[in-house]
Image 1 (cartoon, rainbow, N blue to C red):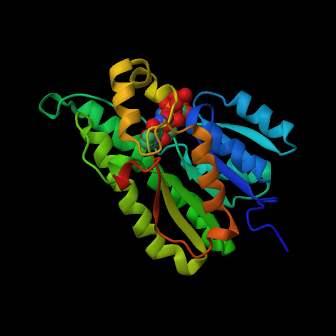
Image 2 (cartoon, rainbow, N blue to C red; image 1 turned 45 degrees about the vertical axis):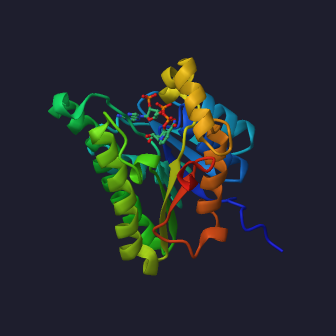
Image 3 (cartoon, rainbow, N blue to C red; image 1 turned 60 degrees about the horizontal axis):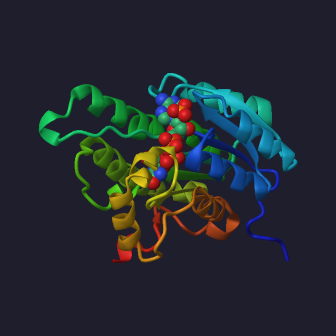
Length: 251
Ligand code: NDP
């Protein structure tokens, strides 16, 4: 019997693959057999070296994803260097914090552009290729703030709610064309992004007490979910946002 989680022969783009959740996803996909295009503005040297050590082909694709300017080149370069494109993981993301009464247009635009606009147009560029070949998997990284309001992060909440909505819309349009579009909503995951929260003893304790699993998530927890959604085991899952949150939303 073939292993439904085997990704041998698949090529995956992972954005923001140099660190944190993106790096863990890239290495989990590589572990499952996929070749990796590690996309971002900081070269993902360590990620590419580790993927190659697993026996995979892996290439750095340099791109600043604060605008849609490089999205078609990212897809073209991946196909040219790795010979195809089967999986896209839209992971790159930023956050800006301020009270809504003080929030600036610059912080609104920066977050919406990277987290939502680039995610859509990179999905469009990859989706055209996937539709033409009759199959593909797109995995968007959402957030608990796709479901909850949060405070002091208006553009982030708008962007991540938008990610969950776009995931459903693209699934509606592309499911019959063989392309699965889904999302993962990570809970509190220990990365650079959350370093300040982890370092704050009181907040750290409050967070752990609020999480039914009683601990922060590890980036590899998200990697496992990405392998599942990228695999043939998830062929009949479309438009879903999967919370990987230690039970946070169950509370
Ligand atoms: P990190 O800050 O550790 O990583 C963010 C990644 O996005 C980095 O690789 C970063 O590259 C990349 N990135 C940001 N802006 C750009 C840009 N303009 N062009 C190219 N790459 C860019 O965060 P996490 O690993 O924690 O987060 C990854 C994703 O998961 C994000 O979408 C985040 O919103 C989401 N998430 C994280 C949670 C957590 O608890 N950690 C919870 C819920 C969602 P560079 O290093 O060059 O800046």
